[in-house]
Image (cartoon, rainbow, N blue to C red; front, side, top):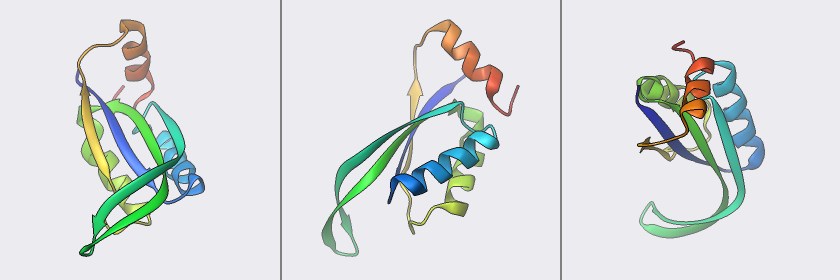
Length: 106
């Protein structure tokens, strides 16, 4: 089974917590780590922006990525939310088994 780490930023910790709670309730993610604040610098509408954001690191299965992305887009405040997936190439067998046991695909 393919596993992913999904990165997402949110405007505030409150928004990140709201999104994470909904994704957990839908069993689209097994867990999330929230880092706040993080300084983000990026191009937006032809100028460089700099803001403090909240970074969320989530663990899931590849087959849930499309549902996860859609769920985030429905409640995220950003016009173009950051949703990036990185493959988990190796991990503790017991952790990966736990991850699988709590997700919607079980």
